[in-house]
Image (tube, rainbow, N blue to C red; front, side):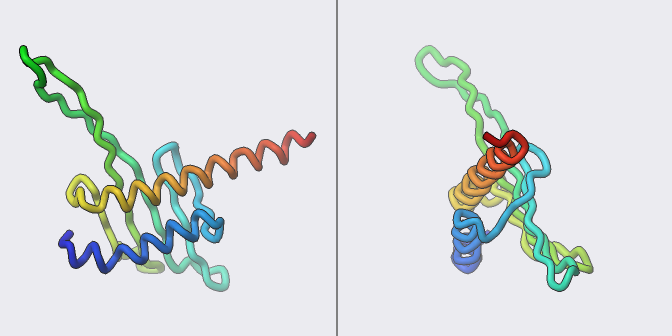
Amino acid sequence: MSPTELAAIKPYIDRITAETRTEQLIWTKINPTTFTWKKTTQGNLEAQLSIQKTSIQTVALQGNPPRPVTQTIDNYIFQAIEFPAASIRVNINTQLDPEARPLLKELFDAISVGADREAINFLKRIFPD
């Protein structure tokens, strides 16, 4: 992704992050590392956003004498899909576009906090005081 493309998409990711923090966007947890949000209009699915966190481990030699050191790198895959055609309109993979990593990490972290809050609210509902 070019710096121009990242600059163009950043305001949208920032808005998604802000609306997630204020609970205007409620994400569904698909599994521990994947979340989706769906936009519907009059009951019809219009669009879906998804974000997935992946991790890779690298081994490098460091020190003197050299010793193997393992490092974990988190990557994020963000997609925006338009329906009913199921066309992928936006696809960002930080393994390929590392400059987008801080932006998508911030979004993923905001979504995770919201999911944790939803889990606590669920437990409060099923186990009232």
